[in-house]
Length: 211
Image 1 (tube, helix red, strand yellow):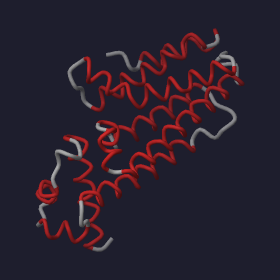
Image 2 (image 1 turned 180 degrees about the vertical axis):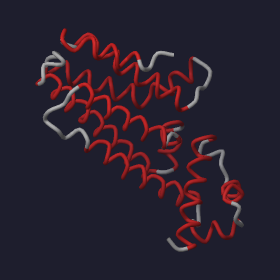
Image 3 (image 1 turned 30 degrees about the vertical axis):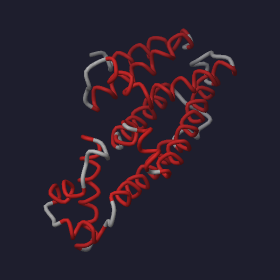
Image 4 (image 1 turned 45 degrees about the vertical axis):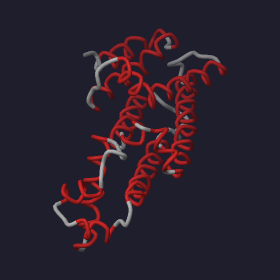
């Protein structure tokens, strides 16, 4: 990797760090330049506007999100497979936390963010539905077809929005704590539908997220 490419990547890493910590609106390009220890002019050589940084990070998010959602394509699945998928999903959303923190203002200011998040949300509901269907086929879960659609939507809402709800009613938490709460909530939603033979395993998986 040449020097220019290395600087560009360092700028993106610093931007992601600052955006996740304090939001896009509260982060200036000068702060990003200081974080990378380069001049503002050098930063502007690589990214002329803050919107260019947002779009570059959005493209990275979309690539990572596609890899996560593609992991749901199998017709056979176990609770362990679902658990792995859940971890990959929460790692992805935590890594790009800024996209979900101030979603409404970002969508207004950066229309490409809105389009990307809409597609991701739809894909996530579909991925959850595929997993629920596969788990039902394996007799791990026993929801009906209509119930699966509703539960899949509920799981996507928890995955994407429960951190914001928790921040509204509680003190703000770290990305790691939020991920634990989300994972526990998602697994708990499945408990009423789990078959008797898989109930113990689900309880054990949910137990990993007790705090």
